[in-house]
Image 1: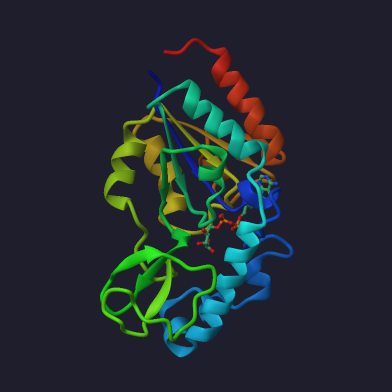
Image 2 (image 1 turned 180 degrees about the vertical axis):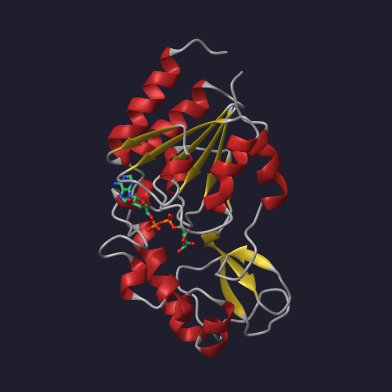
Length: 233
Ligand code: APR
């Protein structure tokens, strides 16, 4: 059975109303990422960081999966075990659409982490700097999000999964943040076919065998229909 590895970015959630980062009105055009998405920013002003992620958590709760998320969930159901989603997104729209084989390499808004003892738990809707860690009681709680300068999650299994795939598909990502931006090169070096589905050319478009441009809610269902039309191999 053909193994497909899919990398998703903020663009797949754009039509669900969640902002992207680097588009015209993207989050990084309105916030300084050094202040809200780095360990140094958290150390300087934990209240600002919690305010930023509390707002994104509320935004995410009010959003719904779109046709692209649902198409990927349908593909996973139709091809059990053949699909793995590696997402840079911290929203839970893939899971709410029904996808189960999802690795959140940048963490999740739903997760909380203690900066003092490393304990993880389900984040409350609103996190405050003084919240005590449920395990060690230290007032050092942070969102379980991988910030700039921190090492992404699942890297120990991602590289092998990329190289063992038959197809690597990137959806809705600008190809500007590493290591995710290098996945296409690594897959290609291993002889894996590569496809980019994005609203417009990304920084990595030149590395893909095939590129298609348009909104994810059109491109992804169309691509999934093509895959399902081929025999299960
Ligand atoms: N359909 C498809 N693609 C879209 C759509 C859409 N409706 N809207 C926007 N896009 C594309 C944009 O063209 C862009 O290439 O999605 C991409 C979004 O790029 P970014 O905003 O850079 O988001 P992403 O690639 O996910 O960022 C990667 O950077 O800030 C960090 O940790 C953060 O995970 C994030 C990482």
